[in-house]
Structure formats: structure tokens, C-alpha cells
Length: 115
Picture (spheres, rainbow, N blue to C red):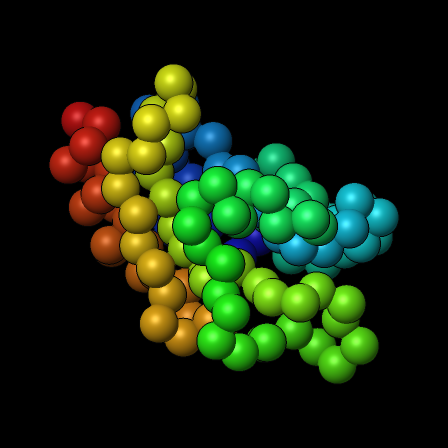
């Protein structure tokens, strides 16, 4: 389990919040790598970038995927807080694709929008 998930898990569980990841990896790639991160989340494939485009998160400035990746563009790494009706309550966009939103920032957003 990733450190940030471990730190947030009790707070998320208390509020019945689920983590959903969206990746440009194929379904097969997600299945093959599922255990590698220990992530307790629903993992969705957005290989065609439809979800990425629906949220306006396509990164066309540079390609940060490993060599040989077929994607023409990748999403801007983002953390979203979405309610049960699909309304985006909060979004944080990563400036550095290797660095995700801190647990303190996510927890503050959860408290502000859901408590």
C-alpha cells in the first residue's frame, strides 16, 4: 500500500470514500501490475483518453511515458474529489508528473467539501 493511501485510509473509510485510479495503461497492463503497488482502489483503463479529455486533462506539452509507449499524449496527473453524482468538488493538478498531491492537502479538501 502506498504511503499516502495508508495515511488517508482511516479518514476515507470513515467517510465511505472510494479511491478510483484512471490510467492510460491497457486493461491487461493494469491486471498484470495490480499487486505491485498494493493500492486498494478500483483501477480503470483510459487507453483512448476519453475520460482524460472529458476532464480536460490531456497533457500535450511533453510525453512522460516510458520509451515505446504508444500514447500520443498522457494525462496531467490530477487528484479529484468527486461526489456520488459525478460532480467535481475539488481538483489538484500536479506540476511535476512524478510528485502527487500531499496527504495533508487531500485531507483538507475532504474536510472542506465533505464534512
